[in-house]
Image (cartoon, rainbow, N blue to C red; front, side):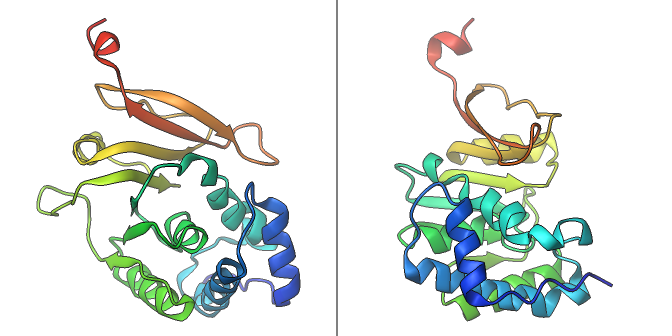
Amino acid sequence: MGSVLPDLAQEEFVDRLHACSPAALAEETTVALWLHYQELRRWNPRLSLVGPGTASRVVERHYGEALAALPLLAGALSLLDVGSGAGFPGLVLAAARPGLAVTLIEARQRKWAFLQSAVRRARLSCQCLNARVGATLEIVRVDLVVWRALRLPEAAVVRLASRSQRMLVWSGADEPSPPAGWRPERRILLAQSKERRIVEWVKARKEERGS
């Protein structure tokens, strides 16, 4: 059984969202995320989408760490979130940037069902796929691929790299290495942590690939 998340008043939830976001949030964004949180509270006791260790700081640890990527979204029109789970970071970024075409991929059927329910309740236009990133999944070309709290097989990372322009990885101290032909570009340290960060991977320049 999963934990019961705090019964936050909407005003407190929104105030905490604003406090941990690196960019201003529109009212429609905070309303969508509040509706997502209500759905998360309803499902979490059954699915353990958010563990008990972070329940008391769910806004800062999960919503805030997703919103931390907002400065890295410049120029992106489409985003693919792999292993979206509770909707962090993909659903949160979809709410914050309504013009972004977001696809959420989740292999576990019950968590996929949660995502569908949360997207409907938050009135977002995300596409939700119940799938694994394998050879049989048709991946459309996107500007940005993201994943958080997930270790992907090397073959899956290589396949995602072939269909994207940039990748964002939420990492701890043990930072993964980018695939061949890619390099780390920027890192954003996450609030109240010396280890957690977002790492941006970009395609290496020709001279770097040849060195």
